[in-house]
Image (tube, rainbow over all chains, first blue to last red; front, side, top):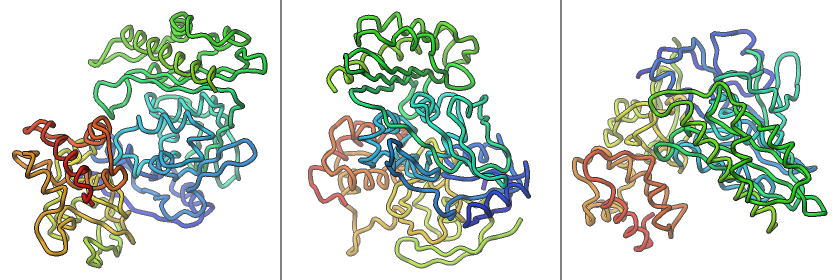
Length: 291
Length: 159
């Protein structure tokens, strides 16, 4: 036993869960798959008086595709996402990012909602949510609300969620075809968090020119970041892989809080990030052109 | 802190226990069930030595609290023994291909590979290497382990 002692709660009803969170305040932490939280508890990087386990809460797991949106319940495991034909067809970027998370033994337990709410700066799912303009659905004692992904991630391991608020689902809009998606990342070892990574989504209009484009980088600041300037440049252009290097340079040029540690300086990470943008751009454009 | 009553099946045997919430499934299996085949290396989810099957899926037993396994079916390396005794197909392949030396990582690898081959009965070499990346071996090196997984897959009765 390595974590500090805590009281365990396993509520069944979503409203009961958020009422419990409201009552316990900052002494409580939500436990979903536990694949980030439990290591932090084991290393005593974090300690909570109460853990509120979501495993019995009704209505939280599940994947559905309806009305142009793929909606994934918060406690859906990453393994379930990986096996889902619905995700592969309607949200390919999420499908491709999933095998990059940890190892398959981690994805058996790790959840979609847990990864988003944990909000690690180098995690794949926050970047995917940001790229696809996802909407995050929450529940608190004050009711339900929806938060756009670009307002959800507020800093390292911090989100717009209140103490008594539960992330219940993420809704990913399905992009029109033709379209292309790609994720590229570099990690020192397979399964590690990436030193830097990039996600790209490209949509083509009836004239086969780019009419929708989203580029995000992760691991290069406290939160994943959209490369809005590069995206604006690309709208209306022909889909080509030639300019990948310029797009990549533009995508990382404005980043001013790139982390530095023994795994790499800020400058190195930026160069790796640019290479990942270029790589993802080439893959996504090729896919869109042939879609 | 309040202990919690749990009921689960471990290698087919029904178990009831009253456990502190912070007790990991790995510690529960080793200490309360006496199943010391599940090894504990890093105890924070990196090394894979404690891998067990939880409702058929490979998981890190050090990253699951025993209370979370309430109602579940757990299979440890001891539970992979065929009904008549002896070694499972994966264990046999490990022995035949010198896929272990000190043996510390072996239970986690055997459980991981068993789960992997159940879902990917005809894996490519790349898929084998990717699947093994979540288990650390500090002495043999991985070549013999890769060979063992390939051999177990080719035999086709790994699980």
